[in-house]
Length: 221
Image (tube, helix red, strand yellow):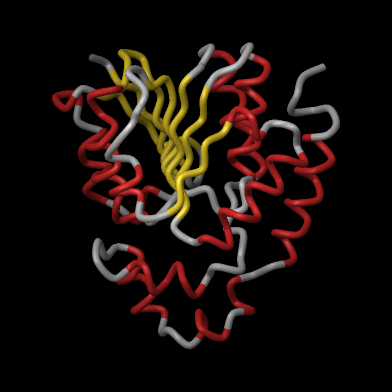
């Protein structure tokens, strides 16, 4: 028995994943009107990404079910008490991480979301899951919201926002990462510079691709 697999979190996640399965970005006229080549460019742009994510503000864009379970397991097994998440969306990954904090005896999860409407939905979902007391949602550009008031020590990081900013976000958090801290980057293949950084032991990380869409890294020093 744990928070992730019992009510209220388990049935809430089941419903949210079903809703996410039924909501495809292909249903967004603003999204499909952008040619595939331009979408790929926007995914890797450090300045123009806001247009793409604004077009997808009504879509959950969650981690996979498997990645959600992985997040819970990593946070739980490492005894994480301090977690930072880049990219809240509707809060599915946030629920997994907050469930781990609950089962670890408490802690603080700082998460940041660019779109106010998504932040509002995430707050409702976290309240329904009974874990809102563990989570601080910061609205706005993560380059600003994660530049201040960070915990002295960070145990785990999830990167799942604008892919082109993964390296910039890591730089903001790096001095707070404890040795052994874990960094999970979803769809990191869209940010080759980030992958090159964490895959170089000289930069203080060990890193491996995990599954089809996740890069799992550990801070070594």
